[in-house]
Image (cartoon, rainbow, N blue to C red):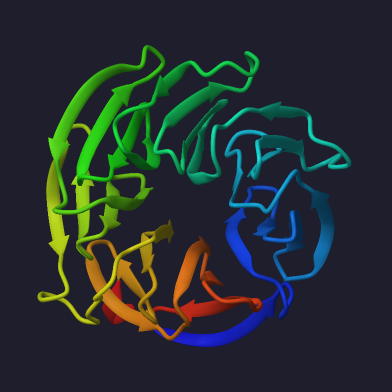
Length: 288
């Protein structure tokens, strides 16, 4: 794996918090100045959304031209006509994690509640879990998967939201998760990356600091993927890149708040004020 090009996106003076890419060919970047900024694939700013407070998370809907921004509340935007939000949903405290599945929007907040909204049906959550230490959420097909602050995975089936699994997964809190077509990936306080088969909830691969360099000494805060590649990041410098379940390289970076993939483009939001870095990656045939 090689980094063939690195470019900057966004302001060198701002603290950015979150980034996502949409099927409408746009980047969205949440900022601490209470704005969400939309950029073209080439990194040209196209739109600025005025949000209710510093923006903690941004996520595009996979099925519709909708963007969710999490600040003092959850605001939904139609990115084709983004002058004002189309809806506003309540959250008790700022968001920690947020993910879409069709019209469902799941969010965990700093009070470690999990709330799931059906955005077609108003502002009342269809699932609310206030007391299980919710840290992160991810959807895999019809499964809603939540990682908690004790290292446990909780799994619900949709649309009934019956709980179907609960199992000990990590030795510390689970702060990040990402779903591929075939499996999902988790990481957190124990710095271990686990690859899971969703239908059976069995661990199919473990990548620990002792088994595969580079060594992470703090925690994993963000996992993203594209085209069979997985990026893993946190407050340790460098972004680990996996192909399948195998580590294929590390992208030099500052400590990261969040990463996002689009094709060969890997975007990184730093924990420090400064622009979002976008790295173009090349994978040689020996890593395929």
